[in-house]
Structures are given as structure tokens and as C-alpha cells.
Length: 204
Length: 204
DNA sequence: GTCTATAGCTGGATAGAC
DNA sequence: GTCTATCCAGCTATAGAC
Image (cartoon, each protein chain N blue to C red):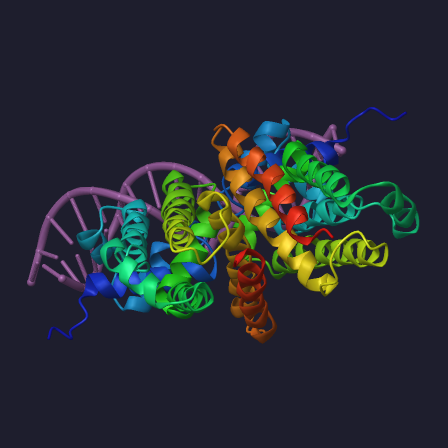
């Protein structure tokens, strides 16, 4: 029951907020410490330098993103009791709310976008933790649904890619609209229609 | 036949290169002018300030991106003589080589990615010039193919989205792999397979 | 764990000579 | 159209007192 937010956490939260609103190099240590309410020098007690601060932010994302997909051992049970359409619609809602509607995660994914050509680790997280891990998970799902005879016998990897890649683009677009405070209902409909269209095309 | 590269063009080219390798705010006027071989003050003869430099880069992209799609008046002729698979495979190659394999355009699209939350104009270009205009074009293509009776009668907009959104994600991924100097052949296969899978699913 | 003080550098931008 | 010279605000980071 430790409700106290430590200075270190405060620094991280404000850094995430500021980096996500502009960019890593555009935000100064001064900007961060001013908002936290400490002197610049105090930040260096908690973090070695500016890069270590960013690195900690990336670690938070990697740790959290691992929690999006349900563990594989309970997956079989879920899949047997759920139609592909139900499962995919539900999973998409989970993914979206985790990445886009959770303030911390949506901010860090903006940081990942803006730093992808500056920081190799950002690229690695996008390619591996966001793209590859996700595709692999969906691949397992489709393989299982093929086994169960619910969907047509395409290579699971192909199905996973065809299903998940549009989702990535829509999420990208969603993040921009959200950042601008614009209406996202059209895009949410699109996400829903995508699942419907896709399932309709591959079900037996 | 004016082959001479003016200083202004040199500045633009080097700025594009440097901004794309890190980010707008991480590159200084000094960095740019050093590489151009002029003094910092000389840059201000050609550009009012750093932001105007970025703005000019965005203008180049907008001007060039308009040339990717063939004009609508000759489109009908092309579509009647080409199968959907041929047309989409060819169009995808065009799009990819224009955006990813042309050094200038691929660099500017990296800049657009990294500046999307810093510069409203970058967001506008991504949403309108890159996403919306493209989708609209493909929509016209599918509408025509439906008229011609080559493909199934789905709403053209839905088909356009389902076809084009995976392409956007693959292009994003392609750019990261390319930036890292990694092998892209697997992804190119994926692009090809996507067209094949998609056409197979919607043809009559 | 936070402060004051400061080092030492780099940033964008301008004035005015040539 | 490019230069020299300069301004000064801003930056990261450290030393050492409390």
C-alpha cells in the first residue's frame, strides 16, 4: 500500500510527458526539473545522465508491453470457448486501450516513434516487442483455430500478418488523431470493420 | 539543362540528410553549414530561420508525393487492360521505390515520422497526403474494378482500407530495416504475398 | 536527497564589411 | 552571396555544502 510517489517516479512521469509532447532532444533537464520542482543538480542523484533517463522510460514500456497478451497456457482454454470474431474483437479492444488509452503507454509509444532513428533501442522495441511478438502471438491463435477447424487452412503466419498489419497502421493513425484532440470514432469503426471483414473472408 | 546545384539546394539536401539521421532539434545550423562548407550566417541569407528550412523540406515532399499516382483520366484505360493483381503488384512496386528507394523521399518520410508530434504540418502530411490521398486513389481503382466485374461487390472504401493499411505498416517496417542496413527480402516477399492473398480473397 | 554555484560548451541569430 | 565577429541565452554536468 505504498501510495507515495517518489521523486524518481515523478521525474520519470514528467519526462515521459514532456518527451512525448515534443522530442527527447528538444526537452532540457531544466524543463523537467522545473516541472518536478527540484533543481537540475538533484536529477543527477537519481539518473546518471539524460540518456539513462530515456533508457529507463524504454524499460518501463518493455516491461508493460509484455502484459498485453494472455499467457499461452490459458490460451487454449479461451480459444475453445470463443469464436474467432469474438476473440479478435476483444483482443483488439485490449490492445487499443493498453497502447492508446493508457496515458503512460500512449506517451511512450509516441516517444518510440519520434526517437526511432535516434536510438537503436527504440527501433528494437518497435520491431521486436511491438511487431514481432504480437505477430507471433496471433500466429499461435490462428494455428489453434485452424486445428479446431474454425477457419480456413492458410499458413498461420500469413494470416497473422494480414490480420495484424492493418491494425498497426490504424493504431498509428489513431495516435495522431488522439494527439490532435480530433474525433476517432470513424477510425474505431474501421478497426471493428476490419475484424469483421477479415473473419468473414477466412472462416469456414 | 541547369546542372549546377545552388547553395540553397545544397543546404536543403544536407539538411534532409542530417535531420533524417537524427532529428530536427538534434541537428544544429552549425552541423549543416559545416557540411555545406559555408558559414552559419550565410545560411540566413537563404532561409529566414531553422523552421523555414524544415518547412521547405516538407514542401518538397508534398510536391513530389503528388506524382506517385497516375492521373485519373488515363486510369480507366490502364485498368481495362490490366488484371487487379498485375495493377496492384505494379502499383506497390512504384509506391515502394518512390517512398523507400528514392533517397530524398525516404529521408523526408523518416523526418515526417520523427517530427509528427512536434510539427502540425508533419501530421497533416502523414494523414492527408500519405494516408487519405492514397486510400482515395485505391478506392477509385476498386470501384472501377467492381464496375468491370473483376472483383466482388464490397464497399470500395473498405477494400481500399483493407488493401492499403497493411502496406503502410510494411513500409514503416521496411524503412527501419533499411535504416539499419538489414536484409529486407523477407519483407518484400511479404508485400508480394499480401497482394496475392488479398486479390485471391476478393476476385470473382 | 536536495541545495548553491559554477564550469564549459553549444545553440540560434544578427550587424556590418567585402 | 559569403564572410568575420559577436551576442547571449540555453544546455549538460559536476563539486561540494547542508
